[in-house]
Length: 247
Image 1 (cartoon, rainbow, N blue to C red):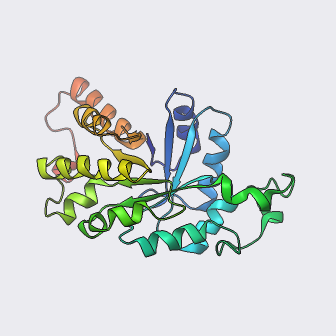
Image 2 (tube, one colour):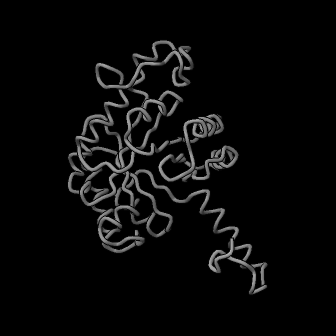
């Protein structure tokens, strides 16, 4: 599930829920390096994979995320194999890449308490690239086959917008396109991911071969749960809501 609140307490609660994986988000959530670090620390004690989504492909941001201990990195808006290759380079130390060497200062190496960290670091990082546009789909086979790309995650919301269906990620054309794309990713030998809050779509995408699926978000659960409480217990028709313009 998505952890989009930027809150360590929420992250820890969800880390112990029995889920396979969590996504800490710097693209659309109110996170920075310090809040992400705190959530990594809060979730570290639990048997859950934690993926961190960078806000973009900036190699400086990627370097900082890796240094605080991110081992599973996701990067949004990848449209070409060249962009994917540049991201791979950002996660690798020279001579294989361009990651700056600062392990003595980093949590990733446990401040140089991990023997031989620099020699094994490249093998401890997984890279997931997000393809979420028609331009990216046109390059999907090449992106997926880029050496160092471990997984491709399809973003339904942005893809729907790119296809002319803004706000309708469950449009049949979008769903069919995603299902086909999952097959392309799997055929290329990479792992395939997608988000789907609708249980029917979860079944559709897993049947198509998706290896990992986001099925919910902390903020969405809180929003819908609090709305359900209001619907059940607030009977005054004049009660202020966002729909009425009250804040």
